[in-house]
Image 1 (cartoon, rainbow, N blue to C red):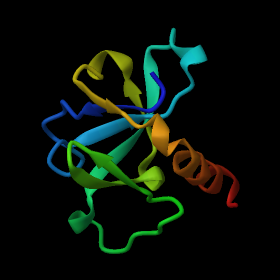
Image 2 (tube, rainbow, N blue to C red):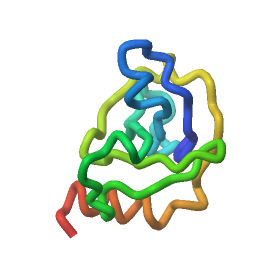
Image 3 (cartoon, rainbow, N blue to C red):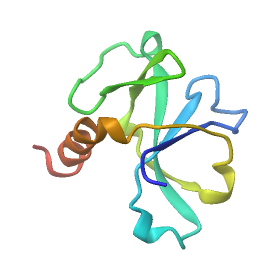
Image 4 (cartoon, one colour):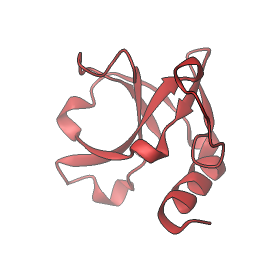
Length: 103
């Protein structure tokens, strides 16, 4: 579902990006992939651009959403849901708009 957060099950990337935020509209749920935004601890980011890197709280951790790393991900690999961050809708939509439209 849109705005669900999953643990990253990919051992190659899970240390840098421990969580993945699903931002794809639910109307596209039949597709085999989902559009995700990786989440990473702020300590791993040298320069945060707040408009495209909003901070999201997951399991008592502050994580940075990397909209500049937006990607497609196999739906079948999104298994371990840990949260839903729909309460951050406005910040997420601002980041999407700025990433895609530049404003």
